[in-house]
Image (cartoon, rainbow over all chains, first blue to last red; front, side):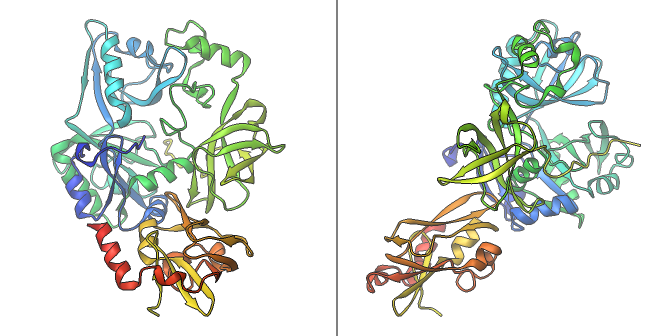
Length: 375
Length: 126
């Protein structure tokens, strides 16, 4: 999702000036000028996030509010998740489906009240997502994109104690729970969530306040600013999907190994969301391909697009994300392979610059998650 | 030390007799960031200038390295394969990548000297 875009047409987040003052190297990403790394560099930014706490600008992502009678039922006509059963104050990961059972986008849905939700979608998809939701909106519901809101993530083992010193009690909410706090007078919506596999939070506040909030967090010794480069290596080690790469309009949630986001009651062909027939069929018959983790044996890095071959040399799939995992201290990859080869322990070959490198299908994550599940 | 010659692709060569030691410039290692993998050519390979000969990878991306001169690969630096960050720490010294036995002793003269390369790099950053 980083197609080159003429520099003049790039949007900026409200933290653009701060990124410049921190010495960030900026790159085009999803139509925005975003920091790919700071002077610390991708490797050390990754390691710092796993060892202490990293601060990420994710203000390019799309936030929106949905409210009105029947809002949960409406979301369930677009998503395969259990939205009606979500408790107030809790967040859930789900996807927007297309009619072919593919994934339009993945998103976070936070229940603010019985009939009120806060949504966070991918930057590259937000215009289409919002148009899609608005086009299907029943009368009596309100859907409002929230471009006046910014978003940062604070991730890592020191995130909880750091944030709790500013927002007392926030260390006691569990993974995928939310809280409201006033931090130095800034009204902040906090969720215990993220995209690194670490414990941590995402903080939403007004664009006009985000620089002050971010500087307050960066003032802690434990906190360093982290760019998109390390964000990608962190989420890859955590086995998390990057939309447009590991999941897209052609991949189903079943192929992608996301069956856990679909409750048992919604796994039928007439479950009331687009593409449910494919979901039911793939559950019954097994999908033709599956998303898997791949552990190369050697040091060679198989990146996105690399061919995956069986040990007999037959083409069985393609790498969708691959790189060097700084915490794994070696290369890691994920991709899709024909189901017959998807079992953990299956040997495969990865084609890198014409050479075949031995690798093995493995369970993900590559680096263990450390989410806080509560007492 | 300042007898290196540079290519527009940011490789350097240092000539001693008919042997050219080659690596990537300090500017190149800085642009790449932390080097995590290096793939070097096989000894004995015959290359022409500008052939893809090696790969240097950072966390972010893979970069092709081109032969700065023509000849035969006669040595590779195993130490950088073992510890790729050597390229970041000492690009022009211990981070050398391979040695080429020159076919044409005068070929390197056509490459940029250090002052010209510095001007070239400055032009890129503007």
